[in-house]
Image 1 (cartoon, rainbow, N blue to C red):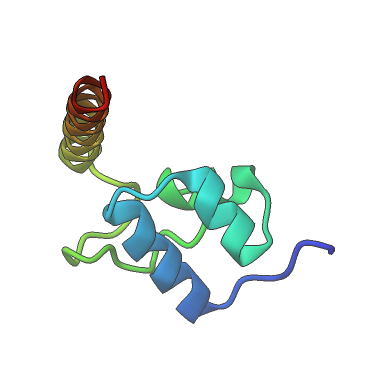
Image 2 (image 1 turned 180 degrees about the horizontal axis):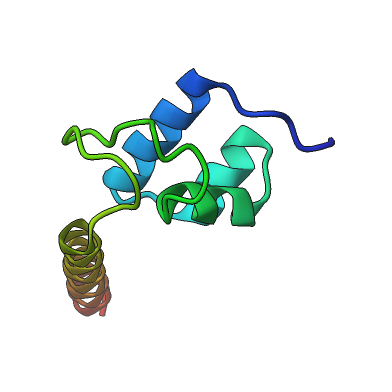
Length: 91
């Protein structure tokens, strides 16, 4: 399927999903666009006039990027702990 042209509502949804910490790969696949297009939106090079959920415009802020990375790290840690617990209980 060829890539499609994004509309303003698509970009709003993409920015919300980036903001919420979804991976750019998942977003690109769901919108049938290239990964680079999603990265350019996140970096503020494409559609910079469309606001992020906090009302800011341009690139995703560094503080939000840090928050997303920390949330992903916590989620991975919890997942690993749950897997270890499950493995121990199955022994």
